[in-house]
Structure formats: C-alpha cells, structure tokens
Amino acid sequence: MIKQEDRGIDRVALLSTEDGVRIGSSNTIEILMEHDFDLVINDKTYRVRTPSQEKPSPEELERLSSVRNLVGQLYAALNVDEHQLRVERQMLEELEKLQLEVGPLEKKRELIAQQASKRTNVLTWVGLGLMSVQFGILARLTWWEYSWDIMEPVTYFVTYGTAMLAYAYFVLTKQVRRFFEKEKVNFILYCRSLSPLD
Image (cartoon, rainbow, N blue to C red; front, side, top):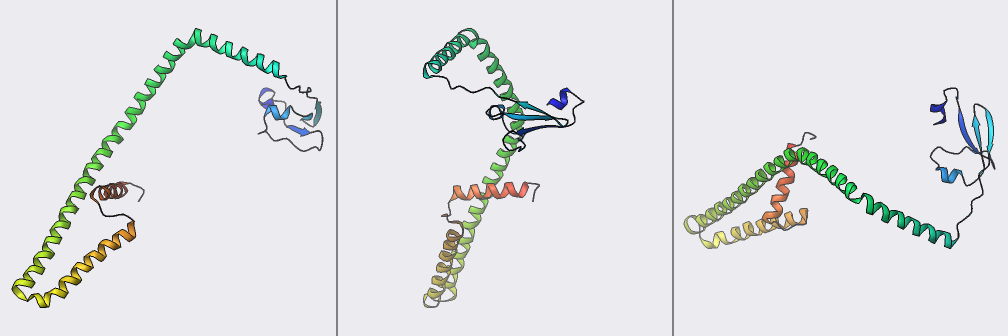
C-alpha cells in the first residue's frame, strides 16, 4: 500500500523489535499494534512505538454498549424504511436474474425427469413381460411337453435363481428394488449419460 502511494519506495518491511523477524503482510493492524516494531523503507529503519493499551473498565464497557444501542435505535428510527425498501428492491432484482438463469435449467431438468420416468415405466413393463414369458415357457413345458415330475426341479431352480438375482441386487445396491427408487436411479443415470464430461 505504501508503494502504491509513493513510487520512489522500492522495498517496505515490518520487523519485530525483539528478534528482528519479519512480520507477515497477512497480520492485522490490531495484532501489529500490540508491540513496538521497526518499519524499514528502502534500507532506512524507523522505530514505531505503539501506545500502551488500556483495557476499558466494566462501567465504560456498559456505557459504550448503551451508546451503541441508542445509535442503533436512532438509525432504525430514521433509516429503516428507506434501507429496507432499497434492500428489498435489490433482492427482487437478484431474484429475477436468478430466475432467468435457472429457468432453462429447470425446463431441462423437467424434461430429463419425464424421460427417466418413461424409461423406468418401460423397464418395469419389460420386467413384467419377461416374467410372463418365463411363466408361459414353464407352463408349456410342464403341461404340454413334459410332466410335472420332470419340470418340478427345473421350476424350483428357475424360481430360486430369480430370487438369487433379486438378492444380488439388494447386496450390491443396499436397496430393495422399488419403483420410486429405480426412477431416481434412472434419473441419475440419464443425467450422467447426457453430461458432456463423460
């Protein structure tokens, strides 16, 4: 900051008077003013003595607090309507800007949600269709082609295999397969398939 005000200054440093360690620029003024320090400007050292810090008494703190409260009440009485209207106008303008930005994204999200819902519905009907085909094949083999004695173990293993697939799904996803959860999963998968990052 000193370099910006005076172009003739090349180097500025703050050093601790106790051990000569350089004080970082990230230190606050409050921390800097706790102890004496050396200000080095273009290889010339200036000793800065900070004033002694007195802690205010509880009475002074109470008086200061009451003054702050009074100032706050005066400010509220004099400026609250104007300030509130100005802030409200700014917030409404920001809300309109955000709605303009979010509007197209919201439409796209609704479109993706509809497509994911359709996809889930189609997969549900395909699952029912495949189960019906499985039932039809087993029924035909049981009552027309072979007897129940031959087909009983086959149907047992097919049914048990289907149960194993359902349990494997549960083990992998830690979820019971439900329509609404599958719709959420399809929504996420569909969003990922449309994202340009993949």
